Amino acid sequence: MVLVVAPSVGLVVEERSCGALSRLRSLGASPAQLIGAKILPYVAVNGVQAALMLAVGVWMMPLIGGEGLSLQGIHWGALLLVLFAISVAAVSLALTVASLVSTHAQAATLGPILNVLMAALGGIMVPLFVMPEVMQRIGAYSPMNWGLEGLLNVMLRDADIATVLPEVTHLFGFATLMRVTAYLLFRRR
Image (tube, rainbow, N blue to C red; front, side, top):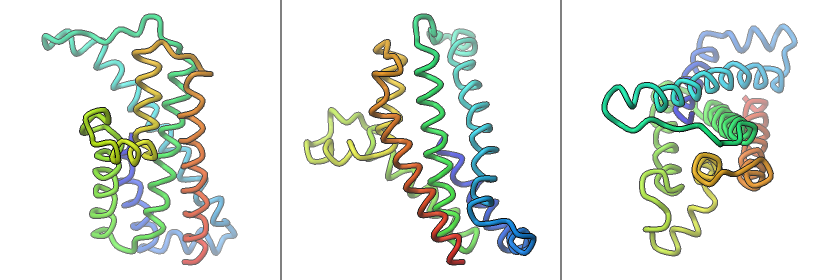
């Protein structure tokens, strides 16, 4: 879902360079409305992406000789809540990056760098438990770690909504911080 950062940043840069954002602003659209209008479509895209990833795990993996993903016994409400929180956090980060950069080259550089850094720190590339203790403490503050832990809790540890609330709360807090930052940067431009 964090892969949505690059295309959404690129779209905002393109809208800014062709004057579409200026025209929308001249029609009375506020920065908050423009930011909000970006969130919904990308959250929907992330929902489709999540459904496709689950479908690949359930039906495609057995076709290529792997073990299929079993979704029996998982708490669907908890899974949907974690996926939604991850999506909102990723899109909010993308909006902040889009508000920071001015060109496609900057967007194409900054988005992937942030993704790789957060993935490395968050335990996506290397599990946290094999990292040195100081890195484990740093990784505990990574949005990717919160998303990973939320998904692991639901998919492997039979977690319900109450169990994933700490990770979901962190993700929504991060998303709020990113949206406020994006709003302030967007207004400044």
